[in-house]
Amino acid sequence: MYSIIVVPPAADRAGGKQIKVATGERLPFGRAVTDGGLALDHAGVPRIAGEISAHRRFWLLDNLSNDQTYVVESPEGAGEHIKVAPGRVETPVPFEFARVVLPSAGDLLAFDVWAPCHAYRTADRRGLPGAATVPAFALDRTKRYFAVLAALCEPRLRGEPHAPLPAVEELVERLRPSWPSVTRSAVYWNIDYLAVKLRLRPGPDDADRPRRANGKKQSLVSLALRFDLVREDDLVVLGPSRSEVVR
Image (cartoon, rainbow, N blue to C red; front, side):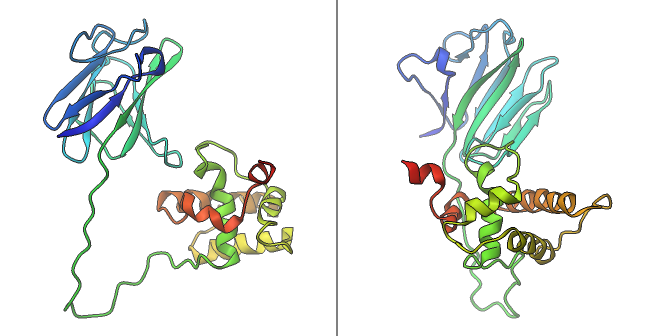
């Protein structure tokens, strides 16, 4: 049974070639790697750049470079990534779908790693005494404040992890399909309400309202994406985007 699948960079992919790695096996990668490894034909890649070790539900990454930090991104996430310092070995990678990015003489060379779906289990709570656990974040997805939060998170959930946050005017336009009477004041009110509801505090330098609102927006999006309070499936509450309507 194969544990992970490694997809070479597009430039090195011959006929959609993929490398399958079984649990317990190791896959070296680099410029001088030959049969049995992932050859990366780029002058900026070390001869032996690193190694991947497959396990049942995750994989480990060795960075064998002397001076380059590698980045492992989650393309399906909202900017999640881990950094692997030079010389670090057996770094566990938690992403089901990951992209390994190597800085290579001014370029960024990347290859993908597909891991198995994560396994989950639910604790059997039958017969346990005491009250149920209070939810960490009590959000009602049918309320307008949640639509505002979804609109704030949408650009980064759509695959642009470093996208700037939408301005209030852009939020108003995005919310209009599902909330025809939306106004700037209503959006500001809901941002303030979310900051209180999620127990966020404004920064000490927040002097005027636009800056205060922007600081709250940054904090709200960071918290929501970090703890999956808003997922891509939740964007349905916004209605179709303008590009979807045009199509």
